[in-house]
Amino acid sequence: MDTVEKAVVDKITGICNNYANKEDLVKISKQKIREKNENISYNQELENIKTKISNVTSSIDNIYNDKLNGVLSEDDFIRIYERKKEEKENFLKRINEISSYINNNFINEDELTKKIIDKFLDSKKITREILTDLIKKIEIDENKNIYIYFKFKSLND
Image (cartoon, rainbow, N blue to C red; front, side):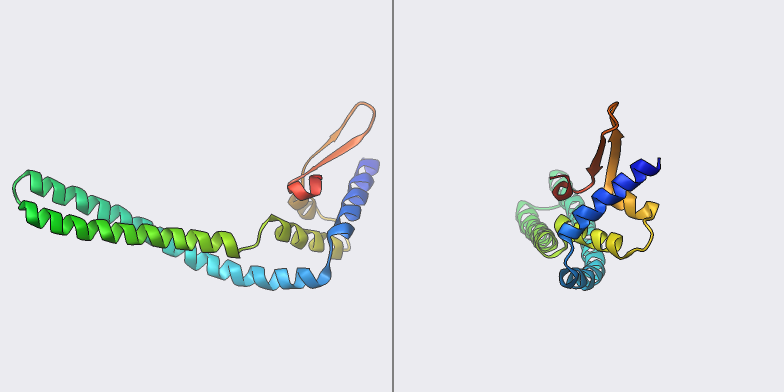
């Protein structure tokens, strides 16, 4: 057990030393805190917009039923339908804008990997939490070769 643990820690330390750059990690940490706060508000806005789209869709269904039942004239139906359709398109456009912003401005896997590596390198004792942040699984074959599979593609290379 001690041999496996030492091999795992040595392997991770070697990989982490190759990836670590303290200046980048400080920037990433500050950015991550800022992004987390922004991300919460964007996710709330996305949920609100999805609810509004659902309401607009229901409204369109209702005005169509009113047209079928003769409650609305053809002209009124077209006028209301066009307004609701434009409202829905604006909501969908906003969803695309928010999604695009989130995809282009929030930390990617490489940056997250660096953050976890920094946590590993700065710790005096390797904890289970740190190892589970980095490692997906460990295999030992019959020849006692140790294979470490990481959660991040860049570390598996």
